[in-house]
Image 1 (cartoon, helix red, strand yellow):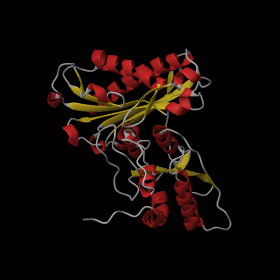
Image 2 (tube, rainbow, N blue to C red):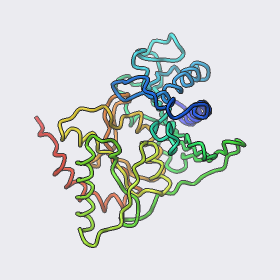
Image 3 (cartoon, rainbow, N blue to C red):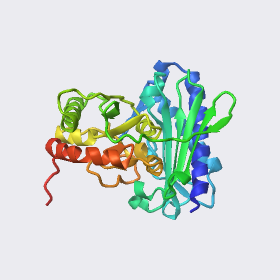
Image 4 (cartoon, helix red, strand yellow):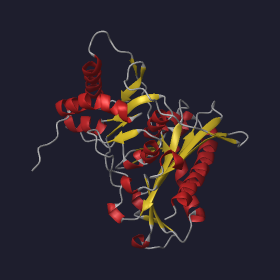
Length: 338
Protein backbone atom coordinates (compact mmCIF):
# COMPACT_ATOMS: atom_id res chain seq x y z
CA UNK A 1 0.00 0.00 0.00
CA UNK A 2 1.32 3.42 -0.97
CA UNK A 3 1.14 5.36 2.30
CA UNK A 4 1.75 8.73 0.66
CA UNK A 5 -1.12 8.16 -1.76
CA UNK A 6 -3.37 7.14 1.13
CA UNK A 7 -2.41 10.26 3.09
CA UNK A 8 -3.37 12.38 0.10
CA UNK A 9 -6.72 10.63 -0.27
CA UNK A 10 -7.55 11.24 3.38
CA UNK A 11 -6.75 14.94 2.98
CA UNK A 12 -8.98 15.18 -0.10
CA UNK A 13 -11.82 13.48 1.78
CA UNK A 14 -11.46 15.86 4.71
CA UNK A 15 -11.38 18.90 2.44
CA UNK A 16 -14.73 17.78 1.03
CA UNK A 17 -16.20 17.20 4.49
CA UNK A 18 -14.96 20.59 5.66
CA UNK A 19 -16.62 22.41 2.76
CA UNK A 20 -19.96 20.66 3.18
CA UNK A 21 -20.11 20.82 6.97
CA UNK A 22 -19.23 24.53 7.12
CA UNK A 23 -21.70 25.32 4.36
CA UNK A 24 -24.47 23.46 6.18
CA UNK A 25 -23.53 25.03 9.50
CA UNK A 26 -23.72 28.52 8.04
CA UNK A 27 -27.22 27.80 6.75
CA UNK A 28 -28.49 26.45 10.09
CA UNK A 29 -29.19 27.61 13.62
CA UNK A 30 -27.72 26.10 16.81
CA UNK A 31 -31.14 24.66 17.62
CA UNK A 32 -31.18 22.88 14.25
CA UNK A 33 -27.64 21.57 14.57
CA UNK A 34 -28.08 20.31 18.14
CA UNK A 35 -31.20 18.27 17.41
CA UNK A 36 -30.70 14.61 18.36
CA UNK A 37 -31.35 12.37 15.36
CA UNK A 38 -30.09 9.03 16.68
CA UNK A 39 -28.52 7.28 19.65
CA UNK A 40 -26.08 4.53 18.72
CA UNK A 41 -24.08 2.05 20.74
CA UNK A 42 -21.14 4.46 20.58
CA UNK A 43 -22.58 7.96 20.96
CA UNK A 44 -25.39 10.44 20.48
CA UNK A 45 -25.83 11.52 16.86
CA UNK A 46 -26.74 15.19 16.46
CA UNK A 47 -28.07 16.75 13.28
CA UNK A 48 -24.64 18.30 12.67
CA UNK A 49 -23.10 14.81 12.67
CA UNK A 50 -25.80 13.51 10.35
CA UNK A 51 -25.14 16.22 7.76
CA UNK A 52 -21.73 14.78 6.93
CA UNK A 53 -22.77 11.17 6.36
CA UNK A 54 -23.92 11.65 2.76
CA UNK A 55 -20.75 13.60 1.94
CA UNK A 56 -18.55 10.75 3.16
CA UNK A 57 -20.50 8.03 1.36
CA UNK A 58 -20.63 10.00 -1.90
CA UNK A 59 -16.91 10.74 -1.77
CA UNK A 60 -15.98 7.09 -1.29
CA UNK A 61 -18.39 6.05 -4.02
CA UNK A 62 -16.97 8.56 -6.50
CA UNK A 63 -13.35 9.13 -5.50
CA UNK A 64 -11.86 6.15 -3.69
CA UNK A 65 -9.65 4.17 -6.15
CA UNK A 66 -11.44 1.05 -7.35
CA UNK A 67 -8.20 -0.96 -7.45
CA UNK A 68 -7.93 -0.62 -3.65
CA UNK A 69 -11.20 -2.01 -2.24
CA UNK A 70 -11.84 -0.53 1.19
CA UNK A 71 -14.08 -1.07 4.19
CA UNK A 72 -15.37 2.15 5.75
CA UNK A 73 -15.75 2.31 9.53
CA UNK A 74 -17.76 5.29 10.74
CA UNK A 75 -20.21 5.98 13.53
CA UNK A 76 -23.81 5.86 12.30
CA UNK A 77 -23.23 3.18 9.67
CA UNK A 78 -23.76 0.24 12.01
CA UNK A 79 -27.26 -0.52 10.73
CA UNK A 80 -25.93 -0.85 7.18
CA UNK A 81 -23.67 -3.74 8.09
CA UNK A 82 -20.14 -3.68 6.70
CA UNK A 83 -19.83 -0.80 4.22
CA UNK A 84 -17.36 -1.35 1.39
CA UNK A 85 -16.26 0.42 -1.78
CA UNK A 86 -16.52 -0.22 -4.66
CA UNK A 87 -20.04 -1.25 -3.75
CA UNK A 88 -20.71 -4.92 -4.32
CA UNK A 89 -17.24 -6.05 -3.29
CA UNK A 90 -17.23 -8.80 -0.68
CA UNK A 91 -15.86 -7.36 2.61
CA UNK A 92 -13.34 -10.19 2.83
CA UNK A 93 -11.87 -9.06 -0.51
CA UNK A 94 -11.13 -5.49 0.62
CA UNK A 95 -7.48 -4.50 0.93
CA UNK A 96 -7.80 -1.46 3.20
CA UNK A 97 -9.81 -0.36 6.21
CA UNK A 98 -10.53 3.34 6.69
CA UNK A 99 -11.91 4.81 9.91
CA UNK A 100 -13.49 8.27 9.80
CA UNK A 101 -14.95 10.69 12.33
CA UNK A 102 -16.47 13.46 10.20
CA UNK A 103 -17.11 15.80 13.15
CA UNK A 104 -15.08 15.23 16.30
CA UNK A 105 -16.12 18.02 18.65
CA UNK A 106 -19.74 18.27 17.56
CA UNK A 107 -20.78 19.90 20.81
CA UNK A 108 -18.21 22.67 20.36
CA UNK A 109 -19.11 23.42 16.75
CA UNK A 110 -22.90 23.17 16.87
CA UNK A 111 -22.98 26.07 19.32
CA UNK A 112 -20.25 27.94 17.40
CA UNK A 113 -17.95 27.92 20.43
CA UNK A 114 -14.76 26.31 19.16
CA UNK A 115 -13.30 24.25 16.34
CA UNK A 116 -14.28 20.66 15.73
CA UNK A 117 -12.09 18.32 13.65
CA UNK A 118 -12.43 15.82 10.83
CA UNK A 119 -10.39 12.72 11.70
CA UNK A 120 -9.43 9.77 9.51
CA UNK A 121 -6.92 6.97 9.30
CA UNK A 122 -6.32 4.02 6.98
CA UNK A 123 -4.75 0.61 7.54
CA UNK A 124 -4.20 -2.63 5.62
CA UNK A 125 -7.28 -4.79 6.02
CA UNK A 126 -6.97 -7.49 8.67
CA UNK A 127 -10.68 -7.92 9.29
CA UNK A 128 -11.67 -7.80 12.94
CA UNK A 129 -7.99 -7.97 13.86
CA UNK A 130 -7.28 -4.53 12.34
CA UNK A 131 -6.15 -2.12 15.05
CA UNK A 132 -5.08 1.45 15.61
CA UNK A 133 -1.48 0.25 15.53
CA UNK A 134 -2.01 -0.93 11.92
CA UNK A 135 -2.79 2.56 10.62
CA UNK A 136 -0.25 3.66 8.02
CA UNK A 137 -1.57 7.18 7.39
CA UNK A 138 -3.85 9.64 9.18
CA UNK A 139 -5.19 13.16 8.67
CA UNK A 140 -7.05 15.76 10.69
CA UNK A 141 -8.74 18.90 9.37
CA UNK A 142 -10.12 21.79 11.37
CA UNK A 143 -13.80 22.80 11.31
CA UNK A 144 -13.60 26.31 12.76
CA UNK A 145 -16.36 28.50 14.25
CA UNK A 146 -17.90 31.14 12.01
CA UNK A 147 -15.68 34.02 13.18
CA UNK A 148 -12.49 32.12 12.29
CA UNK A 149 -11.54 32.31 8.63
CA UNK A 150 -8.45 30.09 8.63
CA UNK A 151 -8.29 26.36 9.30
CA UNK A 152 -5.43 23.91 9.84
CA UNK A 153 -4.88 20.47 8.34
CA UNK A 154 -2.28 17.99 9.56
CA UNK A 155 -1.45 14.55 8.17
CA UNK A 156 1.28 11.98 8.65
CA UNK A 157 2.67 8.64 7.53
CA UNK A 158 3.74 6.09 10.11
CA UNK A 159 7.43 5.58 10.65
CA UNK A 160 8.81 8.71 9.00
CA UNK A 161 8.79 11.02 12.03
CA UNK A 162 8.52 14.72 11.30
CA UNK A 163 9.70 14.07 7.74
CA UNK A 164 6.33 12.44 7.06
CA UNK A 165 4.27 15.12 8.80
CA UNK A 166 2.52 17.65 6.56
CA UNK A 167 0.85 20.68 8.16
CA UNK A 168 -0.79 23.62 6.47
CA UNK A 169 -3.20 26.46 7.13
CA UNK A 170 -5.91 27.38 4.62
CA UNK A 171 -7.61 30.73 4.19
CA UNK A 172 -11.27 29.74 3.89
CA UNK A 173 -12.12 32.80 1.81
CA UNK A 174 -9.28 32.77 -0.74
CA UNK A 175 -8.37 29.09 -0.60
CA UNK A 176 -4.68 29.97 -0.26
CA UNK A 177 -2.56 27.73 1.94
CA UNK A 178 0.61 28.28 3.94
CA UNK A 179 2.84 25.73 5.65
CA UNK A 180 2.95 25.19 9.41
CA UNK A 181 5.63 23.77 11.67
CA UNK A 182 3.94 22.29 14.76
CA UNK A 183 6.29 22.32 17.74
CA UNK A 184 5.29 20.49 20.93
CA UNK A 185 6.39 22.01 24.20
CA UNK A 186 9.90 21.15 25.42
CA UNK A 187 9.01 21.87 29.05
CA UNK A 188 10.03 19.16 31.51
CA UNK A 189 7.39 19.86 34.15
CA UNK A 190 3.79 21.07 34.22
CA UNK A 191 4.05 24.27 36.23
CA UNK A 192 2.82 27.41 34.49
CA UNK A 193 1.43 25.31 31.64
CA UNK A 194 -1.81 23.62 30.58
CA UNK A 195 -2.52 20.04 31.69
CA UNK A 196 -5.81 18.26 32.38
CA UNK A 197 -7.85 15.08 32.11
CA UNK A 198 -11.11 15.00 30.19
CA UNK A 199 -14.12 15.47 32.48
CA UNK A 200 -16.44 17.58 30.38
CA UNK A 201 -19.52 15.38 30.93
CA UNK A 202 -21.26 14.86 34.29
CA UNK A 203 -20.59 11.13 34.70
CA UNK A 204 -17.40 10.50 36.65
CA UNK A 205 -16.50 14.19 36.86
CA UNK A 206 -16.05 14.22 40.65
CA UNK A 207 -13.79 11.16 40.76
CA UNK A 208 -11.66 12.42 37.88
CA UNK A 209 -11.27 15.82 39.56
CA UNK A 210 -10.13 14.10 42.77
CA UNK A 211 -7.62 12.05 40.79
CA UNK A 212 -6.25 15.12 39.05
CA UNK A 213 -5.94 17.10 42.28
CA UNK A 214 -4.11 14.18 43.92
CA UNK A 215 -1.70 13.99 40.99
CA UNK A 216 -0.78 17.67 41.18
CA UNK A 217 -0.28 17.38 44.94
CA UNK A 218 1.95 14.33 44.61
CA UNK A 219 4.04 16.00 41.95
CA UNK A 220 4.35 19.48 43.45
CA UNK A 221 3.04 19.40 47.00
CA UNK A 222 0.08 21.19 48.52
CA UNK A 223 1.84 24.48 49.35
CA UNK A 224 2.70 26.61 47.57
CA UNK A 225 -0.04 25.76 45.09
CA UNK A 226 1.51 25.12 41.67
CA UNK A 227 0.21 27.07 38.72
CA UNK A 228 -1.26 24.43 36.40
CA UNK A 229 -3.92 25.60 33.99
CA UNK A 230 -6.86 23.60 32.67
CA UNK A 231 -8.59 23.51 29.29
CA UNK A 232 -11.53 21.15 28.75
CA UNK A 233 -11.61 20.77 24.96
CA UNK A 234 -14.56 18.53 24.03
CA UNK A 235 -12.72 16.87 21.14
CA UNK A 236 -10.03 14.19 21.20
CA UNK A 237 -8.67 15.50 17.92
CA UNK A 238 -8.62 18.98 19.41
CA UNK A 239 -6.77 17.71 22.47
CA UNK A 240 -4.19 16.03 20.24
CA UNK A 241 -3.80 19.25 18.25
CA UNK A 242 -3.20 21.31 21.42
CA UNK A 243 -0.36 18.97 22.41
CA UNK A 244 1.14 18.92 18.93
CA UNK A 245 1.33 22.69 18.51
CA UNK A 246 2.69 23.39 21.99
CA UNK A 247 -0.42 24.77 23.69
CA UNK A 248 -0.77 21.91 26.21
CA UNK A 249 1.91 19.91 28.00
CA UNK A 250 -0.14 16.93 29.09
CA UNK A 251 -3.70 15.77 28.58
CA UNK A 252 -5.55 12.51 28.88
CA UNK A 253 -8.87 10.73 28.89
CA UNK A 254 -9.48 8.34 31.79
CA UNK A 255 -13.28 8.36 31.61
CA UNK A 256 -13.39 4.64 30.84
CA UNK A 257 -11.46 3.87 34.04
CA UNK A 258 -13.53 6.24 36.19
CA UNK A 259 -16.86 4.87 35.01
CA UNK A 260 -15.71 1.30 35.59
CA UNK A 261 -14.57 2.21 39.11
CA UNK A 262 -18.01 3.70 39.78
CA UNK A 263 -19.78 0.65 38.41
CA UNK A 264 -21.34 2.61 35.57
CA UNK A 265 -21.67 1.55 31.95
CA UNK A 266 -21.64 4.43 29.48
CA UNK A 267 -20.83 4.76 25.79
CA UNK A 268 -19.81 8.40 26.25
CA UNK A 269 -16.09 7.76 26.35
CA UNK A 270 -13.30 7.98 23.80
CA UNK A 271 -13.48 5.46 20.92
CA UNK A 272 -11.04 4.38 18.19
CA UNK A 273 -12.51 6.83 15.67
CA UNK A 274 -11.71 9.64 18.13
CA UNK A 275 -8.14 8.46 18.63
CA UNK A 276 -7.28 7.49 15.04
CA UNK A 277 -5.05 10.54 14.52
CA UNK A 278 -2.78 9.62 17.42
CA UNK A 279 -0.37 8.56 14.69
CA UNK A 280 0.10 12.26 13.82
CA UNK A 281 0.83 13.11 17.44
CA UNK A 282 3.46 10.39 17.71
CA UNK A 283 5.15 11.23 14.40
CA UNK A 284 5.25 14.87 15.52
CA UNK A 285 7.38 14.00 18.54
CA UNK A 286 4.79 13.69 21.32
CA UNK A 287 4.20 10.66 23.53
CA UNK A 288 0.81 8.92 23.41
CA UNK A 289 0.16 5.84 25.54
CA UNK A 290 -2.51 3.94 27.34
CA UNK A 291 -2.92 5.14 30.96
CA UNK A 292 -0.17 2.87 32.27
CA UNK A 293 2.40 3.62 29.60
CA UNK A 294 1.89 0.86 27.03
CA UNK A 295 1.55 1.82 23.35
CA UNK A 296 -1.98 3.03 22.65
CA UNK A 297 -3.94 0.43 20.72
CA UNK A 298 -7.53 -0.73 20.17
CA UNK A 299 -9.61 -2.49 17.52
CA UNK A 300 -10.45 -0.32 14.53
CA UNK A 301 -14.15 -0.07 15.31
CA UNK A 302 -16.78 2.35 16.62
CA UNK A 303 -17.50 0.85 20.02
CA UNK A 304 -14.31 -0.14 21.86
CA UNK A 305 -13.53 2.20 24.76
CA UNK A 306 -10.14 3.93 24.66
CA UNK A 307 -8.33 5.49 27.60
CA UNK A 308 -5.13 7.41 26.92
CA UNK A 309 -2.57 9.90 28.18
CA UNK A 310 -0.56 12.25 25.97
CA UNK A 311 2.62 14.14 26.80
CA UNK A 312 4.38 16.86 24.83
CA UNK A 313 7.71 15.05 25.11
CA UNK A 314 9.40 12.01 26.64
CA UNK A 315 11.19 13.96 29.39
CA UNK A 316 7.87 15.29 30.63
CA UNK A 317 6.41 11.80 30.67
CA UNK A 318 9.37 10.57 32.72
CA UNK A 319 8.71 13.37 35.21
CA UNK A 320 4.99 12.58 35.60
CA UNK A 321 4.92 8.80 35.14
CA UNK A 322 5.90 7.56 38.64
CA UNK A 323 3.22 9.68 40.36
CA UNK A 324 0.68 8.88 37.65
CA UNK A 325 1.26 5.13 37.91
CA UNK A 326 0.99 5.16 41.70
CA UNK A 327 -2.30 7.07 41.65
CA UNK A 328 -3.77 4.92 38.89
CA UNK A 329 -3.25 1.89 41.12
CA UNK A 330 -4.83 3.75 44.03
CA UNK A 331 -7.87 5.16 42.22
CA UNK A 332 -8.37 2.58 39.46
CA UNK A 333 -6.72 -0.70 40.52
CA UNK A 334 -6.44 -3.36 37.86
CA UNK A 335 -8.66 -6.40 38.23
CA UNK A 336 -6.71 -9.42 39.47
CA UNK A 337 -5.70 -11.78 36.67
CA UNK A 338 -7.33 -15.18 36.48
